[in-house]
Length: 295
Image (tube, rainbow, N blue to C red; front, top):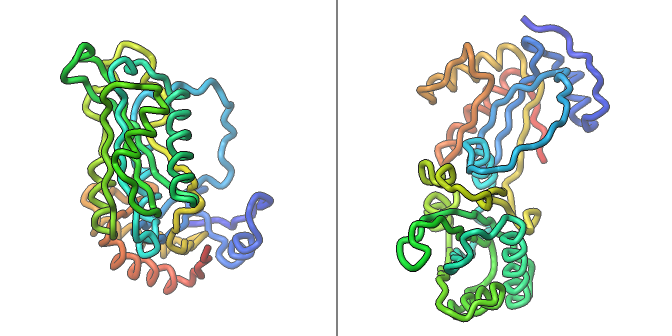
């Protein structure tokens, strides 16, 4: 069912190379591994000798794709919430006349706001940001699409709402009315509510496709001071044996109604249920003779 694994390992770290020597299994030219981190379990398969892809011109990002959303959720699920006891949710909206602001300008505005916040709190503040587009409902730009930011910080004390509004008006050099909001986040439950409601939700159906001007391009989410966000330890089981892979596929078929072992080359589980499921995943790997690598 498998064949000896003996490719060039120059790109792998010492622990991984040593572990490959202990478990030299390749299933259909794929190397399988399992990762457990916080509220995330990922079982994945990778090609041993992937075909080299010629880098071409990358298309401009115009949507919050399923892949981008999954990457965000996987990162969020790995956060150690016990070490992120306080945070802030901040909403920054652009006033009329800013409907055509491009991604480079938006990023500059975000960096300036982040600098104001760190200077005010006198500490480095890690945050998650999401840009979202919505149609104007009133005013002389009614019917036009306009961007706004959702920010979630992972530490820091409360900031007065008028201070937030003052910073945003100063950054945009705007003297009229402007919409900003701020709320405190305390505990895992409230973080989860805001992340689900504002950060990870998909874009409105057809929203970006309906826009006729090119300013909607650019990334739809990102992080600042990412290394400062406390994450749960990452436990990896690499080079899984055929028996372990079969058991993990059977486990996924029981837990995930849409999983098809004959065609799906891996799966991801997210959420609090994974805290119970991770014990079963870990037991399957350990019983199969796989030793974990902890990072």
